[in-house]
Amino acid sequence: MLNLGKRRYKEIIYSMTVKTYILELKNGESITLDRKRAILEACGSGDLQALETLLRSYNIVDKNDWIRTDELSGPPTTTDMVTEAVTNQQVSTLTFLLQTFPDYDVLERKVVLAAMDNTNLEILEVLQTQNPNFIIHDLNHIETTFCRALENPDPRVAEVFVKAGADLNGAWRKRGALYKALVNKQPLNLVKLMVERGALLGTRTMETAMEYQRLDVLQYMFCRYAFVGYVRQEERKEEQLVLLKNANKSRDQGIIKLVEYYVKKQKRLTKRDLAKLEIIGTKERIKAWWQSWRFRK
Image 1 (tube, rainbow, N blue to C red):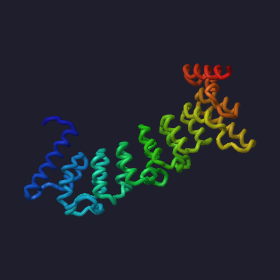
Image 2: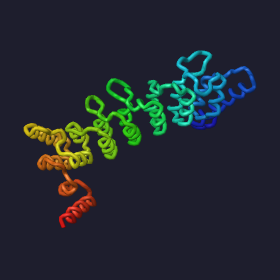
Image 3: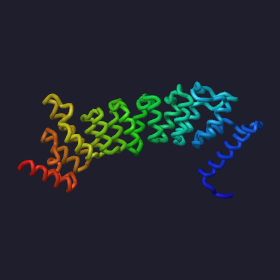
């Protein structure tokens, strides 16, 4: 037996199944193949011509009510068809199905989980356009679709949610989305985008950055803010001690040096400060000193 590979083998089986079924349908012969399976395979392969022909055999045309129940003699449910398209990342098929069933709600749990497990930027944008609540949909009592997006190693996935207006300060085990981003090692550019769009920085974020040794995030925070949330003088010393304690826990000399200097200065840091500490690259240190000298003149 030829070793065609799993993907190629599935493509051949699909082609035989759907094309044989359509041929029988056109010739008016008795139908021996499972129409439901043929429809789902057409959704998964992206064969729009076959899918449209198969749906019309059930008298399904544009602007139909979406199919809620899986009847023995009927087509697959709309949820099953949409899930198959999402799972196989078939953007054109997904768009076609949503146009055919305009009243369908993409927040069906099966569809949402398929979208988050098979992340595709175009698929996510189509689903979010169909229902703006997709970006804040609760997967369980502690996690939303946005939190799941932050687990994806590709930061562009989370960016889709941020730019669409996701809740950046929603609770995730009472820590918020920034905590989730740091835990999952999302890049500094995504953290900056979240802050620019309204994510709140505070001592808890500082602690998380130290715990996960995110020197880049701490530099950004200390250059942007001076003791965020510190109001009363009597509380400041206690907060400073907590920062120093957490810095020492990280065992990262760059973080320890940065936090000690920040606590001592008690105001926003500049690139010149970072250059003094020698915790930024040589090129950046030279640039910072040059700018400092030029402005003094």
